[in-house]
Length: 94
Image 1: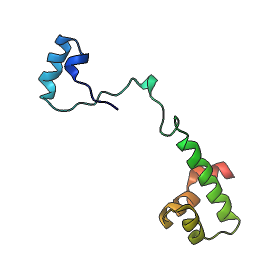
Image 2 (image 1 turned 90 degrees about the vertical axis):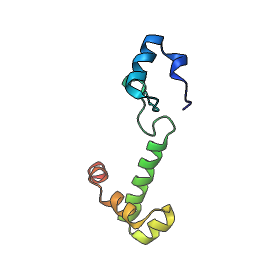
Image 3 (image 1 turned 60 degrees about the vertical axis):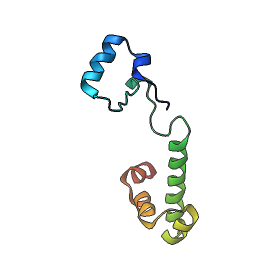
Image 4 (image 1 turned 180 degrees about the horizontal axis):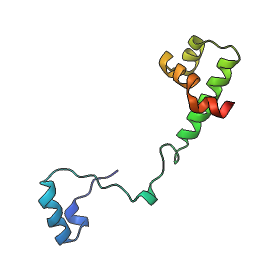
């Protein structure tokens, strides 16, 4: 995201009002909620993680050890266990 000078984009009266409250601090102005996309939806990361987690659960249920899964997916033991024992994935699988 590119930074822009508020003086260049805001009307003068709004700019002065913002200056009263910000005092020269950097301010982040998020997009409207309607314009926001959820994490990982625009680049497919969320879908990739869901497929990976499904594969980890399937492999574990078919006998692959946690250590093997750690090495195969380059994840910590705690991460593998969170995936295996997560309520959300168990509900979807059942």
